[in-house]
Image 1 (cartoon, rainbow, N blue to C red):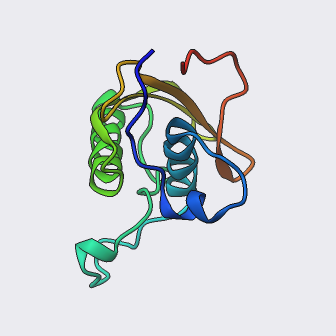
Image 2: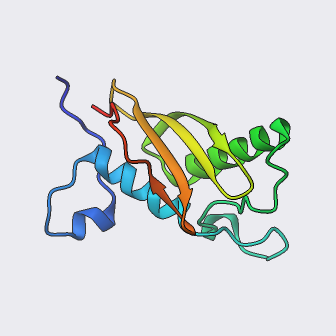
Image 3: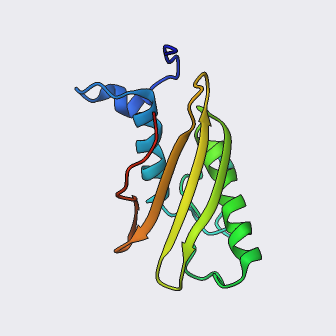
Length: 135
C-alpha cells in the first residue's frame, strides 16, 4: 500500500487526534457543504467565497438544471480543495424536499478514489449512512 503524502488541513492538524488525509478531505467537504455561498450580487472577492450554492430554488425535475448544479458544485469543490485532482459530482436522488449526491474524488498522490454520498437531511448536508468503499 502506498504511503499517503496528501497534506492534512490546518484545522484538523490543530486537533489532538490523528486524522488521516482522506478523513481530512471528507470533513472539509462536509464543512463546505454546510455553508451557503454568498448571493451572486454580493461583491465578495472570489478568494473569500466559501460554501456551496443553494439548491432549494432550483427546478429539480429538469435534468439540465440538476446537471448545471452539479457542475457548479464541482467548480466550488475544486476551487477550495486543492488535494482533489479529479472530481465527478452527480445526483443520486432528487425531490422538492431532498437531494442526494454522489461524489467521486481522486485525491492527489492517492490511487484509491474517495467515494462519498451526501444527503440534504433535516436542514443540513450529511454523509449518507452506508458502507462506503473509501479505502
